[in-house]
Each structure stands twice: as C-alpha cells, then as structure tokens.
Length: 456
Ligand code: ATP
Image 1 (cartoon, rainbow, N blue to C red):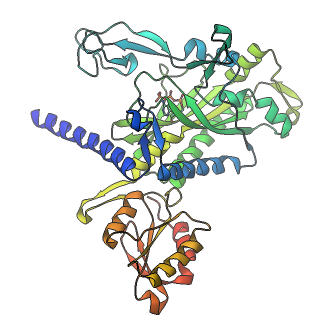
Image 2 (spheres, rainbow, N blue to C red):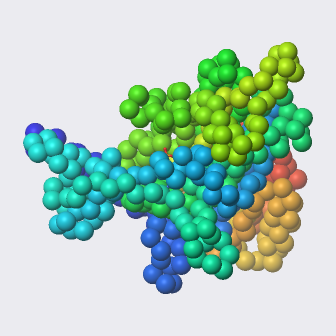
C-alpha cells in the first residue's frame, strides 16, 4: 500500500516537474513570458515571445487553411464587443456561471465542480489546504464587464466576448446572402475570448484571455448526425496528421446526460493527456437550432433559411460546432513534442516541421569571413520561404543543443571542407544523423524532408 502511494507521489512529482521544465524552457528560449513581468506579472496572463508567436501563428494557419480552403466554409473576423442583447440571447448572462467556493481556513477560492468531496461528511475539500471548512457554492458569472462611452452606468455595460461563436451566429444571414452559400456550409473564425475564470492555471491551459478557433457548420436538421460524425473524424485527423500529436495522447470524451449543455443534443470533447491529467482541448457539439432560434427570438429578425434545393423548405439550420483553443493546442503540441533524451544529454522539441517555429539553422563552424559568406548566401536563399536562424556563437555542440531545444528540424553546418567541395552538413534533429549535401540542393532537400516527415 505504502509502496503504491510512494510510486504515485513520485509519478505526480515527475509530472509537475515536466510542466515546470516546459514553462522554464518556454521562458528561456523566447516562447512564452509572464505578462508584464517587470511589474511582478499579472495572474495567469502570458505574452508570446518571438518563437511562441511563430509557433502559434503556424498552428492557427494550419487550422485556418484546413477550414477555409474548403469550398463550403467561409471565414469572418467579428468584433470582440457585441450588442449586450447577444449575451442574453445566448444564455451567457443567465447561465455562464461557475460555482465558487471560499475556504474559510486558507482563504483559497475554487470551483465546487472541480473539487473532491469528503466521503464521510459529503463536504467539499479545499484543494489547497484540504480543510472541509468551506462556504456554500455561489454562482459566479465568468463574463468580463466593461463600459462603452464616458458614462459608467448600467446602460453602458458591454461584455468582452467569452466565446467567438456568437459573432458567427449573428452573421449567419450576412454570410449566407453575400456569399450565396447553400446549406450545408460553415463559417470559421479565429479570435480572442475572455473568461474571468475562478481557478486559472496550469501555465497557458486555463487563462482569462485566450484565443479560440471556432467553426460553425450549418446543416439541414435531418443531417445533423451525419455531419457530427464527419467533423469528429475530420478534427481528429487535424490533431494527429497536421498538428502531429501522438494518437495515444488523444481521446474522445462523450458528454454524458449530466454534462451535456442545455442547448446541445450531443457533444464530444477531444482530450489530450497533459501531465496534470486528461483535459479538453476541443469541443465538437451538436447545438441543434438553439442558437439561431434564440437570436431570431431576441432580435426579432427572421433567420429562417429558404432551401431552394428542398422545394423552398423554410427552416432554422442545425449547427455542428468545432471549437478548439489555440493556446491549449499549442500547450498540447509542446507537451507532446517534449523529449528528454537523457542518453544524449539533450532536450528535444520534436515538433512536426509544419509547426516548428524555426525550420532550419545555418551554423558556420567558425567566424572566418569565407565561411560566413557561404552561410549568408544559404540564409538568404532559404529565408525567402522558410523561417531560418543564423547562429555563430558558442561551440557547435552547444549550438545543436540550442536548436534541438526549440525544435528546429535541420541544422546546416558550413565547415572548412565546404570551401573545396561546395557542400554543407545537414543534421537531423530527431535522429542526429548527418548528411553531406551540395549548396544548391539544400533548399529542395529540406522541402522534400518536410514532405516525407514520418508521422508520430
Ligand atoms: P473547460 O471545461 O476547460 O472550462 P469549456 O468546456 O468551458 O472548457 P468551451 O467553452 O467548449 O470550453 O471552449 C472551447 C475551447 O476553448 C476549449 O476546448 C479550450 O480549448 C478553449 N478554452 C476554453 N476556456 C479556456 C481558458 N480559460 N483558457 C484557455 N483556453 C480555453
């Protein structure tokens, strides 16, 4: 029994260490910094640094293309501030709450639905100090309020959107008519969302300001289940084949009757195995005609779709939603890629080249001008299409380690032999294998390597 407990404690310490290692790597190597750090930071707010912003843009681009290159999906970019009635119609004013509990002992605040219960008394246990001396749960609305215009009164209250989806629903008719779209079709959007979370944490997993990538697919009410299956499958492939996440680190979690949101007919989370446990990175939901129905009721505008392909049948389309966090996907990609290669005394981020923030590094073996000028030419050539780093400081071994730690798939070394044989050494990040390639073949070699990159 005690042995089991020890093993469990050890495992959980290792997992905590992994999150700490990733957080510290992110800061040290320019991925993610604590927000306003020189002022002591601001709880659970993070700034993306030079490599983090590239990584995040690559992820968003992969998502955007996978959606909007389809002929049946259009993109939009709606305003963050919306008419306050939107949030009444959506149910957020009334229902977007979490049950907040205060610990009388250590003053910690936590969510009742995420806390353990004492099996004997049935009381909630404080996750910080394990006391059961806690208050009753009170409902706390997660929307951030602000004021529009110079007067701070209730008439001027607006909300920072807690999800991007509503910007899509209220534009359903605009997009359908301006783009002459026929059902089934989808609208995609990437944008910031804000939630005044009670217990943010686990680095960028749960923050108060984050980015969502949402696509709402409008279908005939009899075709909802078919499209639900289609999008579940398609989103699974995006995570595994494009983002490059290992299949064993992903699973579907179907919402049971107690979990299902009031508007949903069926819902599945895609969960990733984080060091702190399996947790949601994406929701795929069948939202029925709830959203358009509510907006029709509250706005008093007719949002019925007239289906010319079904004898002018008039109906409110059902919506299949796919909603994934850009930040959570990025964290999943980081955790999935993190490899502590102890045998070779190195840490490697084994990103898919599609998302790696730097695609290749050019390393002249010494600072001799003849080597630098070859390296410069290679950088100029590659940087027309790829993110490239030039690094000439420190021993070559240290430079390789730096690049491996940021996930650069290829290092290109220019050495003294290059002056005679017009070749460079290309080193592979994951296998450390090296190949000698002539200057003029480097660009194509890298492109082919990316095309044929092995799936995890
Ligand atoms: P959770 O149960 O973790 O609070 P949720 O079910 O409320 O998440 P959704 O409303 O379905 O999340 O939002 C869709 C996606 O947006 C989530 O799968 C997640 O990737 C992202 N997301 C939601 N809340 C946050 C947050 N506070 N910080 C970062 N990403 C978030």
